Length: 370
Image (tube, rainbow, N blue to C red; front, side, top):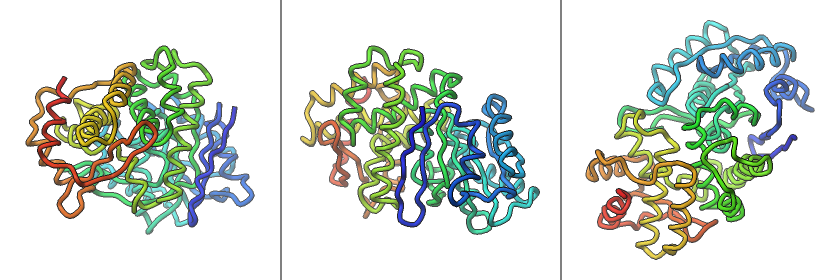
């Protein structure tokens, strides 16, 4: 099965291809388009981590080489804590050693951390070269690989250093999810639930109707396809209307405001991104209920769905409310000193507001402690 989802940006349109055995076709899709996305004969630097490369690197390298590209690879350590400027420096060193030129490209094979760093390196090497996303985690497939946000973390905050740089192509091969660790699968489901809450009520209902959501093997083929294609379509719809987050795109940060604070305070180790987003959605749901934006019934529906996925539903007990608020006030989404929250207005719709008092935030954090 192959589904192509266009991302119709005015200056940088591209396709998301969801296809079984897609890893084996990356080279031909790059080289044989009506206008090749990257001309055959160019140098490509494949960026991955050791675990992912061991599983899939040879397949992708062979596909690219057979299409006529000169390919080298560079491996970065796995983990959010390595998403920093030191890793970017090692990528620059590899690009220099392999003599990447302006017509060359970088190819990201991995999860969101690899995709973000590869995209940022591509955006800044020689003032910008092409890059391709081949996401291997559910979270990266449905979220991080789409939309052109690239970057790294600062010691005092997540994704504070970055650039918008759209990929030439996103290739999603569902087969790789079979080797995805259970915890990483559940982390990706947090982003899927997010799309259901803010944009796609039908997706939310489909998730609710599933008997189990906590393991990939329990999903039907139809639900797996819906999860990938509907989530990607939701992201493409939003990004195509607001590429640089001037307005609508901010709703994609649902659950991320408090979620990013949780990640930072646990030093990107105790809680992963998807788990933090799940906790952040619970907290945002409490805020929305207190402010009258949505009903307790809808908040309970969200809670049950997150719980069914096996994701955490409460803040880690060792986190201090004042520390969370301090990080919220340093978040990149702050405007005129006000923390901006994405809040649901019922399943399938959301708004962005800075009109949330500290009192309401503290009350929501208290309610999020179980």
